Image (cartoon, rainbow, N blue to C red; front, side):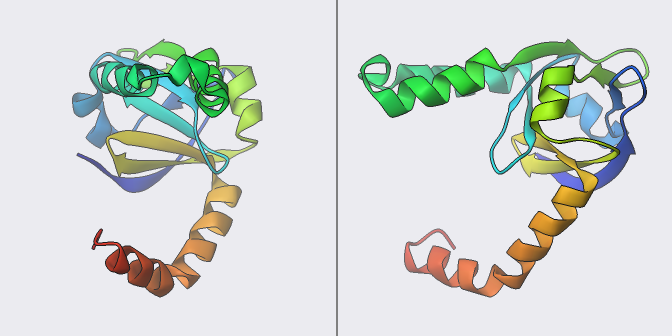
Length: 146
């Protein structure tokens, strides 16, 4: 399971060093794709295959506009990235721009994926969620999630 939060820098060649804690679980190849809420998602190759099958496997997915649009975003923006010998991946310019990454990056483990956030945007987002945590827990409890 991928958990925890780390702050790392993207170098001048758009390489990001992944926290050592995550490298073993991710393997040698990952998929970086547009995420939600302004971040990027990183999936281990095996997990990406599972996610891809789920997204494209629902009946009628190609016939439903919402499914087509979401799949275009996820698959069209996805790139495979090799983790190099010192644990870095390349984050393409178009994905870096999409997530408004300008300085340091928050690398956040969220169970089956990593999320990459511009550090400032992450702190703002996290603050909003933390202020609503009790309300979110209440709602999730009402629908049987917690």
